[in-house]
Amino acid sequence: MIFQSTIEEAHDRIRPHIHRTPVLTNQTINQRIGAALYFKCENFQKIGAFKARGGLNAVLQLSPDELANGVTTHSSGNHAQAIAYAARQVGTKAYIVMPRTAPQVKKDAVRGYGADVIECEPTLDAREAGVQEVIERTGAAMIHPFDDDRVIAGQATSAKELMEDYGQDKPFDVILAPVGGGGLLSGTALSAHYFSPQTRVMAGEPEGAADAILSFRSGVVEKAPYINTIADGLMTTLSPRTLAIIRQHVSDILTVSDPEIIGAMRLIWERMKIVIEPSCAVPFAAVMKHADQFTGQKVGIILTGGNVDLGKLPF
Amino acid sequence: MIFQSTIEEAHDRIRPHIHRTPVLTNQTINQRIGAALYFKCENFQKIGAFKARGGLNAVLQLSPDELANGVTTHSSGNHAQAIAYAARQVGTKAYIVMPRTAPQVKKDAVRGYGADVIECEPTLDAREAGVQEVIERTGAAMIHPFDDDRVIAGQATSAKELMEDYGQDKPFDVILAPVGGGGLLSGTALSAHYFSPQTRVMAGEPEGAADAILSFRSGVVEKAPYINTIADGLMTTLSPRTLAIIRQHVSDILTVSDPEIIGAMRLIWERMKIVIEPSCAVPFAAVMKHADQFTGQKVGIILTGGNVDLGKLPF
Image (cartoon, rainbow over all chains, first blue to last red; front, side, top):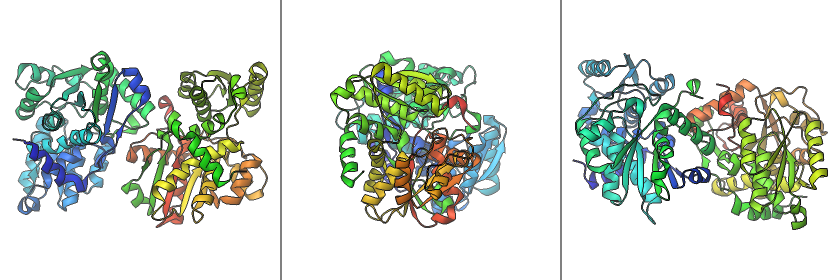
């Protein structure tokens, strides 16, 4: 169970190891949408993504005994770097199972933090089998990318900072995050619930990995009808844990196509002069698509990360 | 003549119309160079480049009579947007002569500020003829991109902010800017001279437009041996006005090749998650190339702009 104090303690725990990331606004974009948008720039976070928060909050709670054998996880990218970075911060070894199709820049970054990268086929089965092998071989502690209260409480601190820094005079009407496994989304929803109850939380999801919207409606964890999206960080399904929080505290999930994601990504690069990855553009793409829903509102958007392979841009 | 008070008055004049841009640092880059680098992010400035400063400082000093017929200039890009933006801020018309080879994103942006774009051949003669035609037709006031004390004093405010925000406890050992026509470089040198006399100022210049280093050595304005560089904002030669200031207050000019510029640009995109244009990467490329010259020093770098055509990236 994640209480208000769980998130506050998480924030105190990870604060020495993370950036309090800036919040950017842009007049041109506000005029185009007809709303006041506040972008929380987790692309400037340590490891280039919000996942540093959850990874640190989990690893920093391990006992010396648990840490002795290192930590492990599987991830297509940013959680991998998060665990590698967190392991380095506490002085233990990280073993990261990554699909061989993950962007080279992410594999290189993981190795740059001193972690071992174990490549596997790009399926959930292969990833889980890879982690199991690592655990049997090393005794490393597994940190799941999202199905873990420590991780969720860590991710919750991004929205907490956004509300502390820009939601005091007037609370946000709505905060949006992307949804993959649901760690960030459920953390964001809990932060709004505890720290700004009048603020709604919504999600953006790629049409090409549209599992969360089905699960959100049916109440059971469903798979996407098909997986085909440029948003490579959002391909995973929810867990019962994240679904339960999302069903209770999220007001809606909006889906967007890949061309809409790429257009939103390009607009942010061109106008805001910041590098964001495709998964990161999904909530803004949803706001652009459904601008009428946000007219005149104060809107927070978690920009999740900027780890993009510059050799493989979609424009 | 540009006095300390000229720069201070320029700053007061333009302050309501510009952003006080952030200064970013990056641990990985500092470790690689072995120095403490402070990047002044003019890519986040209005119009996406420092040139908003000089353009505003010039246009805001025009009399109502002068403003009545509008303003004009020729520019390959950022000065064009600067004058278009400044004209809109004071409610007058801008006529911008641009080479037809200028990036589409820059032409679009100029038109987006309500200016007329007059396309011409990409030569200095054609650009100057285009402006002359505009002046004869409209009576517009010409604002030169750099050969103008008002413009130089405006550009000087970027380094002034950098030193105010990060040079108080310990002055910068050196501040670097790129050099094209020399407006930013001479302004930066004057700011250091007046506000932080112990700070050296250096320039980065593309090998493929290496006129400033020749002029700097000989003392007369020289042309580049050849023009062939990705740094499309740095192709112009100095004027006697900028050369005189640079000879007096700049300690050295370092040249870099296009592959070095592209490598520096890519490293900033990948590590700092910000969008900068090729011209903007030139001083950092010089610091990377000559890292030994900067070991242990406190180094300021003016990141000049982020107006890059995302459809034509060099990687």
